[in-house]
Image 1: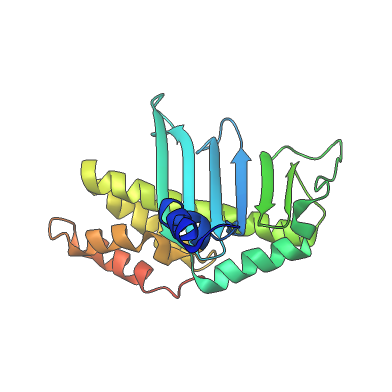
Image 2: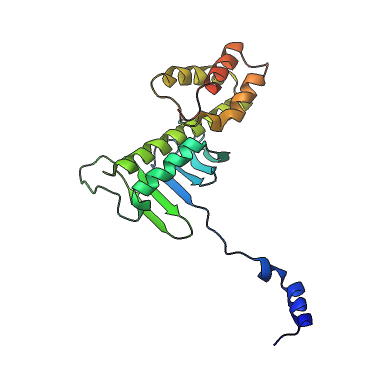
Length: 219
């Protein structure tokens, strides 16, 4: 039996052993797409249950350029979209089964992958097209989110290097919003706010950025 003094010594030497708690895996969903020839050719989106999200993409700086462009962006996703992602992941069985339709004559639209992991379970499946309605919704959601984030990336590049290109980019975006509302527009709020605050940018362009920023989040 250890004497009290010995127990105290152990506490001083190994305090972490006394207070340590089992590490809890943050529930995480990851979507990735590889589609050579498209822009970007590869991207992945990681969303945690606490709302923290990370986007990574690799492509070319433009359709005319051969220079590669690596984009990494961290943001916080809206509660509504986060809940939808995890609800659909649950309905899809946390991707623990084969998601692909395996139709031989199905057009190739990119190699897609969905993965889930928490402290109790994990699952991952790769597909071109899935007949699972929940997977289809997730795919559309993540592809829409990627489109929003890539828009922010292009706007940041244009604001820094070619401000005149901002006008055409935001005009085209504003016209498309009526038919295809952007997903998680608040994720690119920082760059939109920079455009709005930059007095060297045309007023009409700054107004378009403001209207885009005022669009209801998550719609």
